[in-house]
Image 1: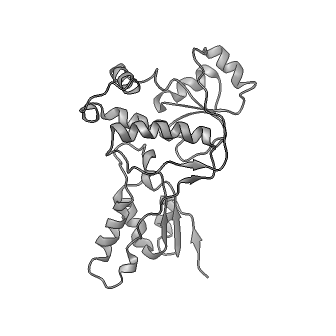
Image 2: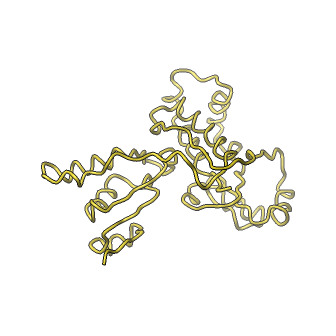
Image 3: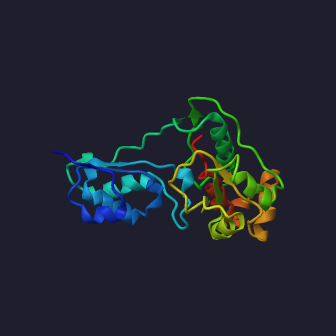
Length: 242
């Protein structure tokens, strides 16, 4: 009987010869070398998916064309060209989030594509199946008030912040559902608060962000401020489900 396995990397090493079909999400998190190992396990039964704009692992910039290049390399001059992966299919209908969240995420993606065109392959806009309210902004909310809200009306809400600040906010708010953005990548939450994203950026990045948001950038912005690209991708990656 054919076996279908949703496999993570450690398990893959143990079961490299046992699966017929391998389904792998968050493909962008893996280097080309790791993808080659997946491919060698079962090239004809490998199904990969992922969002290119959410490549938040430092040092990895992923494109699905790289998977096809692995196929060409492995197959070489062999007759069976069916082992080369097909061109990626693009899904533009989002079945998990409503239009309020997708429109906001689309605005961030627009900044990314306009100012860092080589950061990710530009795709068509995502659409939702139903409408919803846009995310709000809580301005000048103190630690005590936020802690009170999290223990009452906002109980169960997940807070996302820069990874190096997550432990500080857990202690300050006495609240355990605080995660770094990279730490939480791949998880799904119903309600999310992005906490002090801009306030905790290095002082050297404050001015570039101000110029970006006020449309004051110049032709060298991409080369002069590569960290802003990574930060935009972080914002793209912390969308809640609802």
